[in-house]
Image 1 (cartoon, rainbow, N blue to C red):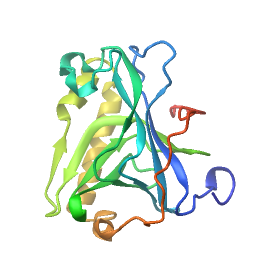
Image 2 (spheres, rainbow, N blue to C red):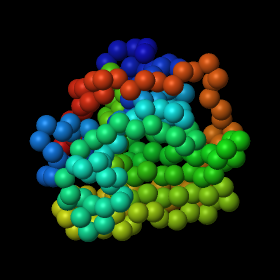
Image 3 (cartoon, one colour):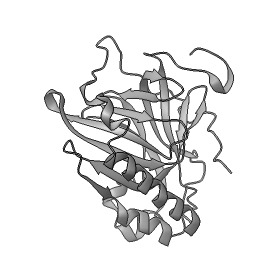
Image 4 (tube, one colour):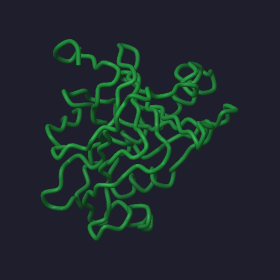
Amino acid sequence: MTGTGECARWAPGDQILWRYRDNGRAHRTAGAPPVHICRPVTVVQDTDELLAVWMAPGTECVRPVLADGTQVHAEPLATRYTAPRTTARSTWFGSGVLKLARPGDPWSVWLFWDRGWMFRNWYVNLEEPRTRWSGGVDSEDHFLDISVNPDRSWKWLDEDEFAQAQHVGLMDRGTARRVREAGLAAVEVITGWGSPFRDGWEHWRPDPRWQVPPLPDDWDRTPARMPS
């Protein structure tokens, strides 16, 4: 990493952590870390305008699971956000994911490919603007997402989860309004085909010399505080 303090920049090939805080859930198991998603990634680009990272196939990650080990999405929606949870290590078996985030944007844009580098789609993940720390970036997921197809058509995703998060008190009315406004702002970028959609990232390929970053034992270290 080059530079010092908040202006420090990572160099291409640096390995960092891309993490999400738990959404302030009262059901968190005693002793569970405040971070519930952790993905080791490799830096592609880090500038004042854009942080781009690559999550390679085979990456060991941390994800939330129910206290009995059941996958979260196997739980009915009515209790999905109130059932006790913990975290588990798992391996990302799918194709790799390129994540793009502009500083201050309340979303990041992910690119997915099928086998043979057939580009599948962009995915707009609405989230808290990322907080940088020495080992990576931290954010908080906002439930609502947008899928963008290669033909530039788009659709909302997970609106049921977004509504349920509000229903059980994980998101207050003001925050939900800001998230929806952020989504509409992202839609304006999509319909105007602004960056990063117009920038040709679907043709990008990782450096074959890059190794898959390991998941450190202290993956939950020094979590950034939630912005006040």
